[in-house]
Structure formats: structure tokens, C-alpha cells
Length: 322
Length: 302
Image 1: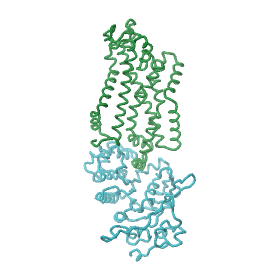
Image 2: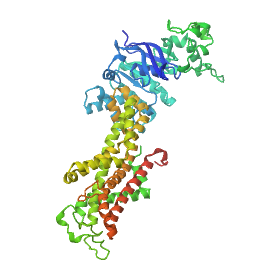
Image 3: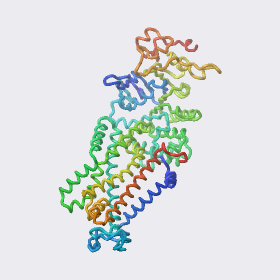
Image 4: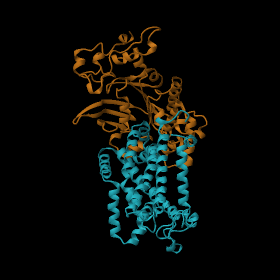
């Protein structure tokens, strides 16, 4: 049994009085203990929605309208409020995009860390403080003791993200969901933070769901990739396989658009068009208006995910290479 | 947020703030230290002599140097009654604001965080409360209270009643301010982060969101103290507030008002001046505080 198994997950938002639009349209995902999965897609593809849905934290007026999130064989969506709170931040942690806004500006680092720990463990203040300092040292924060009494605005962006990571690791979680953990950071800090996350996951045997739109990062860190488009998974498989031989035209387009692929002085490749908003999806495959291989069948029926790709005309290896 | 040293610097560079601060400090000290420094205890009938009544201020002909600002009809020194009365006015003002703040912050926080029908219900309740004038509500409540109990009981509980009535009538101001701040704060990611950590809603509301909404609360608290003192003075002036044997500034003005046409203007004028100084200094400080704490109006050097 997989550690985490998301089955046919739907998330819907109301439109008008009776109508609903779906932000997630049936996503499947499985994750073994200690495994690292990359979730890749454009803004609005439903990546963050998936992360929040796993923790049953879809904010009003949205709701999970179908599917199951099995964590060690237990459906997280069926748990009581108290039950799910015991999972959140304890067995599943989350790291957000922008460390400037995820720490509470009026509470010290120490207060926020100790509070997290005390929400899940019966532990004295002194012990909690000791453990927090230990974790801060683990994420390579210099003079950890004095940082405990610092306010978030006294730390740089990179340091703050390290604090956020330390908080995520506090309770020895089995799974960390990192939602674009380096997007808001300086380029020079990005690599450091990513390397730190990778190292800590390996050392502590923590599974990772890395949500990003940076295929380069995913290739370095993850073992498997899931490509999302307009609320659906369009391709899934081992990272190396997908990077070397993408089968969905969208994945191929994303890879082709990497700046490294273009020669010096050459125009960068761009997938024509943009992702349709979830309120105005075309019939059939959501990618068909942008796809050069689109046929009548693509415009009529949504291709099912079969053999790791949701496409009626998956690319062959030689096509992808061209 | 603003650091304490920057706060002090801003204060010392603003003459209006310094002036208002000094006036308020003097009045508060005068009220707190009244039992020690007042020339006379106006609550102690043994110290009063009816022969001393309606004496003009000391510098006027017929004045007595024991009573710097003259005496009222019962022979109480106006200066002493003002000292004690300021204390009662301040006590009621601060007490009423504490009641307002506790009620308003709790209900505003719940309305803003929970949203939905709870929010609608609480805010309509606030609308209803606001559409009834505070003074009218207070007059009805206090009139009922003074009719229901005899004069002695009324005198004993007048302070508590005034605090409760003014406090309950004015809670929507706090509730609305807190609610609107909460609506802004709860969309921020640190709230999502707190939920992801697995904290219960109660902890998120009180421990995480509330500290981020305290700036506007601090500003309206100051203004509301001035407002509460004014309401109390109005009620006392109408004879529904503090009884004349334990007078607040409002009841002093009222008791002197009867004598203003017989020439004893000092009984009314001096408490009125103190009331104006008290309310004005509180309002000026409140305005200054609002400007200082508003990041949009903050100057570069902070």
C-alpha cells in the first residue's frame, strides 16, 4: 500500500447560484515512503489546489467535490476537524512560496516554532526550545539561539525560508509538500535552499511533493514527475524518462521552452496561446487549441490517462527529440 | 510596526503631541494623587462647612485662600471636587472602553474570521446598535435603573452602571474596526501557514490574527476614552450619571449650572474647562497616534 494515494480528486468552486466550475477534474497520485515527486504546470493548472486539497484545506467557497485522499489507508477527507489537525503540520508539513508572508510578522521565530511543536507534542517549553534550536542548526542558520528571539522582518528572505523549512521539519513529518519553495528567493539562494530540502529529505527519509514550474529543479531533485494542465494530470512517470522522452505534446513544449535549449542569440521557444481559464475550458482535451497534433477526436473527448500519458497522439521518441 | 525609540522620537518632535501629553499627564496625576494633594476631601461631610458655601475664587474679593477656585453651594472647594471628579470621569471613561474593547474585539474577531451567517448576524446587530443613539440608550437604561432602586443603592452602583451602559452601547465601533482588519489579515499566507501547521481556529484567531489588528484598536481606544468621558458628562449633566455627593466632572458642571445666574460662575466654569482640556488632549493624542501608526503617512527616517 502506498503511503499517500490520491484517487480521482475533484475540487469545485461555485459560479453563480447553482453552477460550479472545477479547478481539479479528477487527479490521481501515489507516493511511497521517502519518495520525491515533482508536480509541474503553469500558473492556474491546479498545483497548489492539489496541495491544499490533500490537507483538506480548500478555503470557502471552494470544496472537494469528489475523490479520496488515502494516507496510510485512511481517507483524510473523512477525518474530523480534530483528526485532520493531528495530521497537518505533524505527519504532513507544508512549505510555502513566499517566506516574507508565511511567518507571522508580530510573533518571534521562537514563539512560532514552539507553538507548532506544542500543538502536536506534550513537551515543556524548555525542551521545545532546545529542539527548535537544534532544528535551526540543522537548516544551517547561524547563531540559532539568538534567532529564536528575532522577528521575521529581522531576517533575510533566504534565512526566513530556512526557518520555514525548520518549522516543517519540527515534528518529523513523513511527507513535506513544498509549494514553489524557491520562487520568491534570489537566484543565488534558490539552489542552496533546494539542496537543503533535498538533503534533509534524504537524511530523514521524508517523502516530498515538490510543486514548481521549473523543470530544471524537478530534474535535479525528484524521482517522479506529474505534469498538470487545467486541473488534470496529463503526463506522469519517472523523471529521467519524461525529461529525455516526453510523450505529451504539452510536456514536450515545456521542455522545448527551457532557456537552456535555445542557442545563443536565438529566440526562446514559446508554446503558442495560453492555458484556458477553468471557467472556459474547450471541449475534449484542454490542450487542443494549442496543440499542433490536435485532431477532431481531441476536440470531442477528454483523453484518459493511459500508460502515463493523457493523449490520443503521444509523441514517439524520435519526434520528441526533434 | 514601529519601534519604541522611533515612536518616542516622533512624539518629541511634535509640539501638539507634547502639549496634549503634558496636559493629560497633569490631569491624570492630579486625579490619581487627589487623596494626597487635594486641600480637602469633598466626600467627608465633617470637612465641609455650610458657612463656606459659594465663595468666589481666592483672587476675587470675598475669596478665601483655603479655596483657590472658590466653593460650591455645599461649601466644597471647587479645586478639590475637580481633582476627585476628574478621577471618577477617567475611571468611567477607561472602564467603559475596556468593556467596549472586550466585547467589540471578541465579536469582531469571530465575525471576521468565521464569516457567513455569523458575520451577517453580528454585523446587523452592530448596525441596529449604532442606529440607536448611545445617549438615548444610556438615558433609558439609567432612568430605569434609578427608578428601580432607591437613591442609596443607585449611588453605590452608579459607576459600574455607567461603565456597563456606555461600554455595551459603543461596542460596534471596536467590532467593525477589528472585523475589517481581520478580513484583510485572514487572506494573508501566514494564516494559511498556521492552518497547515494544524493549529485550531481559536489559536489562529487570538494568537495570530489579533496581534496584527491591534494598531487601529489602539487608536480608537484613545478616541473612545474621550468619547466615553463626554457621554458620562452628558448623562451626569442630565442628572442620570454620578450622584452629587460623588460628583464626576459632568455632575459638577450640572450642580454649578443652577448658580450661574446668581453670579457663582466659578462652580461651573472650572470643571467645564478641565473637561474640555481632558477630552481635547485625549482626542489630539488619538489623532497623533493614528498618524504615527499609519504606514502610509510615515516619513522616511523611521
